[in-house]
Amino acid sequence: MKCVFVWYILSIIVCDVLGYWDAGTTTLEYKRTDTIPRQSFFRWQMTQSERLVFFFSHWDWNEIRMRRRLNVVAGISIDKLNLGVASILNRRTLISSANYLDPWFNRQRDLRIWALGRAGEHNTPYRYRVWRLTRLFPKSLNPEHWHGPRGVHSPRHDICIIHSLDMIYIYSYPPTRYHYAYRTFLNWKHKPLTTDLWFSGSGYEYLQHVYENYKIFYGLVTRDTVEDCSKYIPKWWGKFICFRNLHRYAGVPNGGGLYDRDYITGIGCFEIRYNQDKIMVFTDLRYYMDFVHLQSYIWFGQYYEYAYPQWGIKLGYFFYDSNSNDPGIPWHYVQKDTYPLGKKK
Image: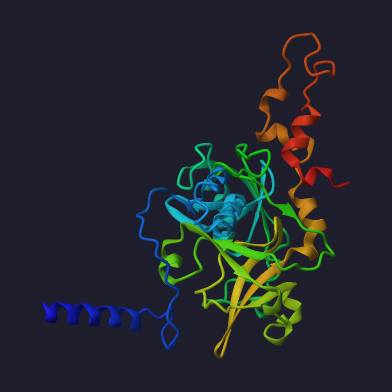
């Protein structure tokens, strides 16, 4: 019996020693006690209803409320491959990184969006089709702007707008009882960072999390860990927000948003490893707000292509849509679909 116990202890020690996040380092990987088998294509962290606060006050409700913020995050996949995540702006529009979507621009209609469904559970997502991908700016052809193992990624203007072919089910206000999908909001151009900063992703914490790439988690960063990006990368690469990777995460999530409370401020781009330093780099969206509004807004005529084919058909000879029965989309439909982008003049 003692021999079995000794071998058990030795096996635990060996597993910890071999559990490094990368070869050639003495830093142990980040461990999470998540042993639930896979139940859905994407899975969010579980939340609980706010009505249970009185009965279960010993639960960590700060953690539960932080998990509930993940309802603005959607997963992106193609075929049976999980690619990354995106942030929901409204019922038709999402924003994400462009680098991991570049190989699939010729198969835009085959991409799928996974968002929290009406069942209100963390593992019952709804699947939506993609209508169009729009990279905010064309990919740079200058080799000095490329990085990565094969030099195929360009961090310059690494932003992509995703338009959904189907209307995404989004709750009308932040849900507190069930885990419904919600939307994030664009930050102001001159808004400084506050102390409530967090980011999300489906593969960044530890190597197994990266390999699986379907568990949507959140991570915390603080304003005092902001680094000057110009010490590590050229200024002409773009506008970035850099943080020291104090938790020793395995990387930066593909397309994972950096949020300032409920406002999206950045998008996960890449990670810098300089000696023993690990720097997480996010594209600063505050410099691109006007371009995001321009590229993500859907004009009235574009709706006839996919969103509201019923409004392009004349039904009878009488007034149907208060416009002499001419094909047209009611204003309140368009306003709901493009909010908050539709209010910008």
